[in-house]
Length: 138
Ligand code: FES
Image (cartoon, rainbow, N blue to C red; front, side, top):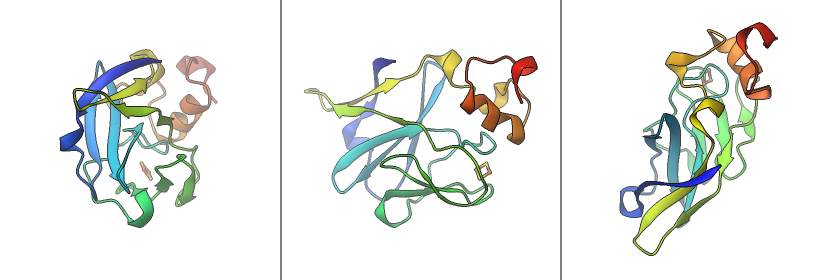
């Protein structure tokens, strides 16, 4: 993972998830109780984009596709269809007021339109084994 500049901290207003793409990686930023948090921008259920949407109370993220609810503090699935936890990335605000996030390499996060396994069932398998090829998926 490398620390990457994602956006000015001033853009990350409370109450909403903010979706960005940095070098092919989808990242979701949000502000919860004054803390900037960063998670993967693709749902682990079927790889749909997770923002920009209104956050639920306590920094919970609800995927609009099938209702999975994730805790943005640790990525754990709270309710909804069975799927892996949402990856959470370390984030900080630098001296220039920019949000920097430790992001995975693009090949470690499959954008929805490039889902190597071709769908919801297999995206969960991809998150469980991100280096696998479609032939190695479950
Ligand atoms: S894609 Fe998010 S819950 Fe199905």
